[in-house]
Amino acid sequence: MTKKRFQLTFTAEQDGLLLRDALKNWGISKRTLTAVKFSGGELIVNGVERTVRHLLSEGDLVTIVFPPEEVSEGISIDEGELDIVFEDETLLVINKPFDQATIPSFEHPTGTVANFAAYHLKRKGIPSTVHVVTRLDRDTSGLLCMTKNRHVHHLMDVLQKERKLQKFYVAIVHGHMKEDFLSVIAPIGRKEGSIIERKVSEEGQYAHTDVEVLKRIERGGQPFSVIRLKLHTGRTHQIRVHMSHIGHPLTGDDLYGGEKGLIQRHALHCHELLFPHPITGNMLQLTAPLPDDMSRFIHQNE
View 1: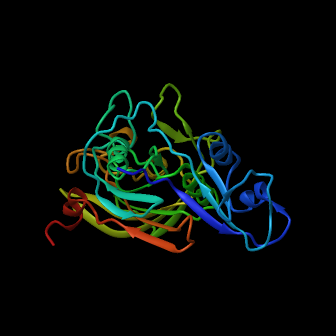
View 2 (view 1 turned 30 degrees about the horizontal axis):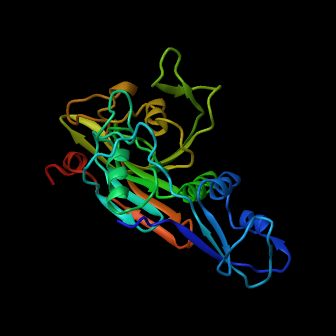
View 3 (view 1 turned 90 degrees about the vertical axis):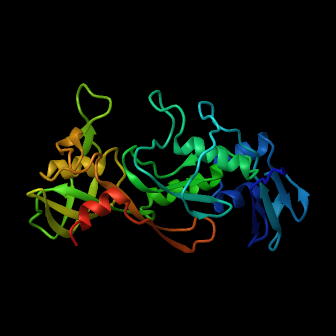
């Protein structure tokens, strides 16, 4: 199968600008440019390969051919199905089921999203490794964004830092929340003696979550709230820690004070991503329906 190398084309808008400076203006990072120069990429101006010291003229057509990438060590290429919500030559967004890890680990070396994505890229003849933009916990379901190129990964990271990548979740928490809407702003850091657990801590990193109550329900004689959350930051376990901190832990989240029984995993689903496409700038609004376990819990007896 022919390898489909990723490339971008730009038009120079002024005379006398070094190609190197134009590339910087077009969002090409130093790391990406180094890879283009030394790892098999090409810089082509009006059909002729040039160096970064080439002086551009207004109207010059510049094509950047990005080098092929190798699948990262530790990621085996496993055949498996991905529930693809959106795909083009730059992005791959899937609806991840719960009970699947995002990337390999000692406990889950195979069968992860990254393993299946590596197979998907290979099958399509795309010479790239797996670039995960929005990682989800193993038991969190919903939208997960990946890119097919390190440059696009860089652009998506910039969008995240500028808070232009908006992430919305639906969760089921213990108790009836009094407020219909509140913002939880509380720093999050590691819990002493644990490599996994986090906690609200003055020494932690700034973290901000908006919470909106969608519905208050009772199940098995117990009160629950169905909530929609918007993440303004992306700290590890942010939603789980913040909801536990305000006294409404996620149903099924026994690590942070929730109880299993009516649902067997923490009831959290990334249902919407909203962001400008990193290449075209067009707004993308992607959604994923609630999985069966959460939907049944919310809508039983209706």
